[in-house]
Image (cartoon, rainbow, N blue to C red; front, side):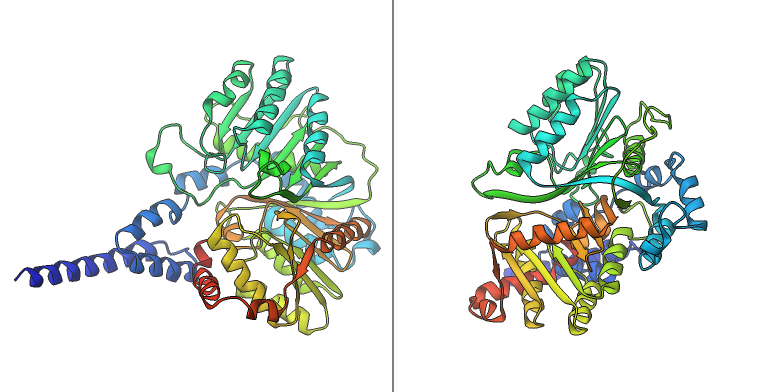
Length: 482
């Protein structure tokens, strides 16, 4: 009799769990089909517990928050973009950008990402060097400092940054900080107490002050931006934390890529920050003024577009940019990504390029920081290796760089990884740059990284244990939700 009731209860739990799973994942008509089936797998394999996982990882940003992002003013950038759509290359030498015209037009159409020319761009690959230059620029700030990071940890370098910003706020400089509460390990209110007391403004990205149901992992601010006086900008992969300076034994040396930009490209970064700030804060709203969007006299040779993506947009701008870059390559493709979990379109494009005689090189870390993500990365790396594509594991420390270079012509550097989370879930920002000199420099940096890397051949993967290959395969099934 008891066994009968146990069986009946188990059957009822199974039926209820299945129905609840169907209602949960299919009610969002805009969710990607691969994500739907991945979440069905989780909810069915882990009854009840799976719903807790979904609560943390599966829910999207609320509709009112997305609407708030969508309705922000683009602060004059839209008018510039509209003019450039009529004559895409009016500000540059048309002969120099014949092949890039369709690429530039793509971002103008999708993102109103204006094309700026004559930017001065420095490539920063070492955390100590990057923070030294950034701190020097912050110390020299006269009017404002706008900071936006996924991660600002309450550790040594994080407090050094906040202390410096506090000093500048006390000196009358307008200081604003946006951070992601999840990426930064919480609100860390005590960390910002003195900065706020000095007049600095600090906000957790799109996070209500008291809202239990805002606790979720998806749809977070993964952008990394610093804009100083409207004429110096930083964009790339570095966050703020001791690990990004190689101070954590777990990761060792931290290899990343960030850009220091002087030129009109900074104005596009400023517009991005303004939009994020105005969507996040309920108090002070920022408006267009010459103090924040000054005339910049730069003498560089880099043309660039600042491209954003996130769940507030219907078009996956950075993903389309990556796909377009890979598809339009004629000679070479060089990719660095800590989380290499591409969708089928990206994989097809890479494999087609390789079979067409284009040299494709991909570099991933040799150690994980997120186990499931790394095992999935290994799976896709093994697929590429079987295709004869050059796949390298960086051994010196942890590789966090998110870069693509094609044909010694076009470069992408930013916050977006080569994974579905960056393509569709997180708020990201990348710089797409058009410069032969910069592309050649980026490829020289890649060649230098090869000195500390191992080529991953089919034989390398064949030697792995069956258990490890199973973990890679299983992690791959979860890639739409990693």
